[in-house]
Image (tube, rainbow, N blue to C red; front, side, top):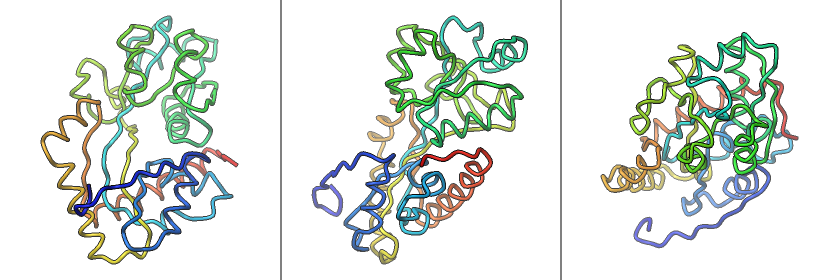
Length: 267
């Protein structure tokens, strides 16, 4: 519930989230239409999709971040590496060019990989897929050497020993996976993380935004919900309205630079 009223969930899949984006951006600015957006939909798509009819950083307002989404870097068990640093060192020594799978051209895992390869000083072949559900079987079979995604979709493969974790995104190790090195341990200047947040239509009155923010942050801060989120290897990340505004602006600017530098286009 929100404001003591039931919340109606209206799933609008398709077009890499752009259908839902456009619906939320064009809704009445009264706070009754919320979009659950992420780093791809609300920070990257406006640059990778020239056909997008709205501009998320302009036409939507951040209410609060919900979660940070650390990623696992995983390899096929046949790869001779137990850490990301060992993977990089091995890739530099071999003549064979390894490949990596991502959930599509221009998605943030692809853009993070481009940045990772540049900093690491190695070359890899990009194999784009529609999602982790398609990547995982090929990773297990050895047709894909490396991929990275949130823990949830990869958990069954990790726990079954069919893939090997070599790193987690971010500057520090995840408390849920203390034995897995952080990405920053292999590349000290590099961190990568996804996020999900609540957005609503630009122009929504400030008092309405403040009420939305207060109720959502209160729910996110409850011990029970925080424990459930952390149990899924995610990090609760509530923000004030001003923090949300600064965060969204900074993310849009960062990913615009990343997309232009990579030359990626999803059109």
